[in-house]
Structures are given as C-alpha cells and as structure tokens.
Amino acid sequence: MLQNTLIMKKYKIGILGAGSIARAMAWTAGQMENTVAYAVASRSIEKARAFAGNHNVERAYGSYEEMLDDPEVDLVYIATPHSHHYEHARMCIERGKPVLCEKAFTANLRQAEALLRLAHERKVFITEAIWTRYMPFTKTINAMVNDGTIGTPMTLTAHLSYPITHKERIRRPELAGGALLDIGLYNINFALMAFGTDISEISSAVIKSDEGMDFQDSITFKYADGKMAALQCNVFCAGDRQGIVCGDKGYFIVDNINNPQRADIYSADHKLMRTVSCPPQITGYEYEVQACIDALEHGRLECEDMPHSETLRVMGLLDSLRMEWGVRYPMDDAEV
Image (spheres, rainbow, N blue to C red):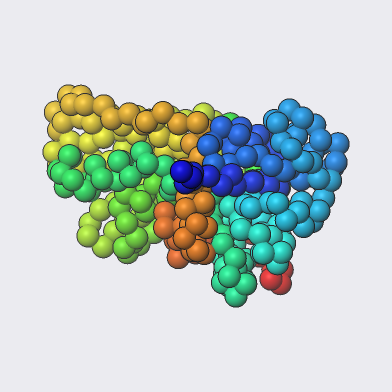
C-alpha cells in the first residue's frame, strides 16, 4: 500500500549584502528545518565567494541583479545599509521576488509609501525585518502589560545605546546616519507594542554631530489615556538596554529591548516576584523568516506581526522627529 508522505518545502533564501547581519541570517537559514542559505550577492564577487565559503552558502553572485534573476531564490533578505533599501527592494519587487527588508525599512516615509504601493500593484510580498516584532517573547511581554500582572500600567521607559560613533553608517548623511534609524526605532517599536498607538503628544530633544546626524535622542510619547513613554538612545556610549513598564501594583524590567531574553517582575514594594525567560532560539532571526514563509504559504502580501500600516506609522514618526531636529538626508530631496 502506498503511504502518503508530506515533503516539506525548503525555502531558498537569497541574501543581498554580505556584512555582519548577513552572516547572522546565513547561519539562521542554515539551522532552520524549512530554509537553506542558498545564495549571497555582493558588488564584489570576491567578497561574495568568501562569504559563501565561510557560511555554507551554495551560490555567490557578484551583482545583486544576477542573484535576483535566479529562479531558485524564494525569498530575498536585504542586508544592506538602510540608505539603499529603497533601491534594492524595488529591484526585488520589479523581478517578482518576495522581500524581507532589514530595518529601517527605508530612509523616509515617501520611499516606504512608494515601495509598498509598487509591491501591491505587482502583488509581491514584502515586510520589514524589525525582528522584535516577530519574537514570541515579545508577545509574552506585551501580555504582561495588559493582564494585570503590574496592575494598571502608566509609565514606560526604554534606553538603548552603543558606542558606535566611528561607524560610517552612523556618521554619514548619505547613508541615512544617526541614532534614530539605527537603534532608536527599537525604543519606538517597544513603546508602540506595549502601549499602543493612541499618542496625543510627542516631545523630544537631540544632540547632533558635526555632520548634522542625531547622536543622542530623547523622545517622550504622551498617550491620550494618560500613559507616558520616555525613550532614550545614543551612539556615544554603552547602555543598559532595558525596557521598564510600571503600574500601580508593580513593574517589570526587560533585560534587552533589542533582543529580549528575560523579564523580571517586581511588586510595588520592589520585591522580585518572578522571572519570565525567553524560550531557546537559534539567533532570533528565525521568527521573522518563519513569518515570511507562513505569509507566502497563505498567499498574503504582508506579515500579521508587522503589517504595512505599522511600517508606515513608524516611518512617519521617524520623519517627523528628524524634521523637528533638522536632520536631513540627500534622499529626502530625491524623486522616488
């Protein structure tokens, strides 16, 4: 008697860019059961071949276009600087390739709107790779905000900083530099996920570099229901990376809003009540990849965890903050 056997499709991931974040994705795709790190593309064939050899990637391409023309590529992960995301994601969409695009999605809101409009017209899947949006532990954290664990939550603080002023992507306007698009959007996403989007007022302060990029940002969201979120990020120094949500019956501390592994829950008299830990993970990137696969399997053009409306919301917030601070990029004046 013949036995039906379900054969799992192995999604072939094409990685556009060969930097450090691309290495993490190659490892992740190689460890997942239903994906393979199939191809990598760089503007340098030597760099692409070295990357492929070091990370067990089957094919190396010396141009992005060549990889995108490979019919075997099922999903493209864009791992280039966010200054180039619009150009590279557009190349993918025009060739009908589903896209997982690193954060920040684009350099500004106009680029994001144009990309999503094109993706909808061509019926091509695309989503933003803001990995904390896809992590199961993030859902655990968000549930603790609303389930009475700390009573009625009213205050949120989030701090994220790294000593990275020497990085080209941080210093240069043409690379859409500064702290906000590189790390500050983690703070913003943490607040939006925990406290929602009904923001009635935003106030902020900034310290800028000689090149005019934001190097230290302080942002406060005032919510219509009286909640408040105080968000700080900078590229001058190392920080605690913590997110803290406070209520009238206690508070909890998330150890790292960039990749949360633990949340310590305290009573109103500062006694540790319990600790909630993140389940084992490969790197954390597997959740966004799996979300893409689930969407593709069901014929969707976006992910439920980071719908296009949320990407546009965040890009709009980033734009408004930059405009208030006078932080401008060359692409702000370019046609899309």
